[in-house]
Image 1: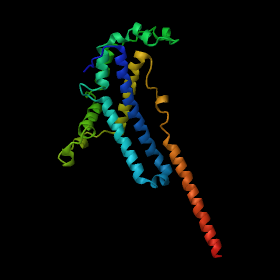
Image 2 (image 1 turned 120 degrees about the horizontal axis):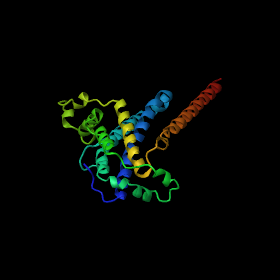
Image 3 (image 1 turned 45 degrees about the vertical axis):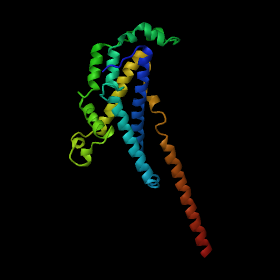
Image 4 (image 1 turned 135 degrees about the vertical axis):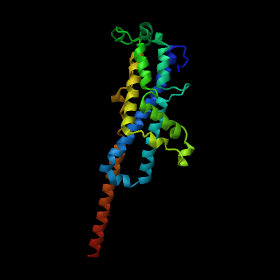
Length: 240
């Protein structure tokens, strides 16, 4: 359902708010995968604080799911991809060349950027709406997870009287596809609207910060081992 807006500035606020959700979902996802992939090379570092790392990975996985559910939520009054696209469809006049030039006033390349029409085609919008709705199997399954575990916990799951999640597993490949598609759709309309978007080379900045922590933990453990060897050496020397 479209969101009632009165100006292009309000549309921009919607874009910025949804951008935050998409950014968070992708960031939590990359951090989660990064920790999983790093473990084999840093097994000892992880073993020093097993509970901490377990809860960190669990929190990242849950945060990823929650933000992804918000992005693809189907609720009529929520800010999500479906409602954003419905809002854009109802306010194509905000994509006019005159409005675009006003938004990019002062941009040295505005003449070049405005030479082609930036108004989305209705057929494209309809296809994109379908692609982020429950008509797509992966979105449908995501909403099942949202309604049964992310937004609230289905009591019947605890009582083992409902196998809806087992019957609708959400694979890592599907999560990857949903994350990637959210970026593609958002960038398409944000680029048309104000020539901006979530560019991957900027989005991924800082996603490897945890590696510094593992590096320093490794150096600390190495120093610890060296200290133990030195103590053992002195102990043997004193006995002799």
